Length: 344
Image (cartoon, rainbow, N blue to C red; front, side):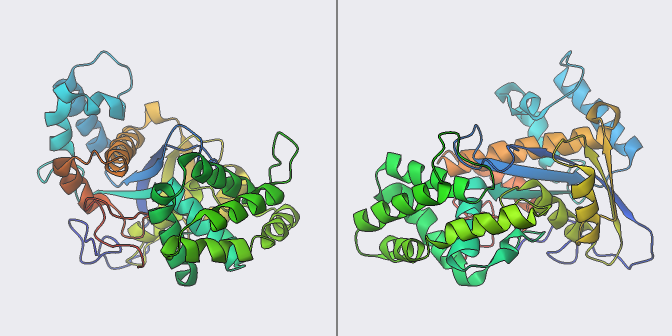
């Protein structure tokens, strides 16, 4: 398991609880709500930073001095340009300012969708809407087989249509064309189950097809209970996971987060009562250098992870990012970005 620098274990900084809160700042990258497929990004990343405001301001000043861009607010793309690679290596590296003071939660959106689908529909487990990066071991294997074999063994347009149907069926929102999400999902599961050859993918699709009728039941329950946590939304569980990391020693966590419409008062109340931060304060990023650093960290982490997914892994950057990544991230390792593999 990953041990973040400056810690005594995989869950977070080692400290004796003394009642004082751990104050962190956070921001996300690649957020598109519950739309996990068919959007513009394939990875969601959430970064948190535990530096004091003055220390974060010094780091941002150093970045400005090294990059020398006239931009009023620095973003991840400034560091992702080849001419500034040395700055990125410094920022993430062992002599940089973030190691031991930062944390990243990564979510592969497609794998997250398949995991939630198999939990909520195949296993009929409504706890899939719970806070934190909840995973059902009983269905993790099915999700992993779908993930590893679906895209390579099925026609690409069929697989994409199945993913879109799965995404729709896990949301209470209706389809714009007026068709019933459960019917479309059931149709696609049947097509794929008949198309797949014998093997792991066929076994997984059979389990999906045999439980397809539960999809509309799940949607009815979603509409009736209207949980504060939409089951597919990656932001809220990532925030909870970050709070678990920073509060692993028993200390309460207070989060300063960039303003985000998804963090409504109702959802913030749910966060603070379900294992998340004790307090969440929304702040404009341009006034808080800690949030600017969290935004940069989340952005570069998402880009590095996305390139790994696409087969363009940058070994040097992966090795530097690895100590920041939470072992509970929803990720199937491809080039060693995460040391903890998914269930086989």
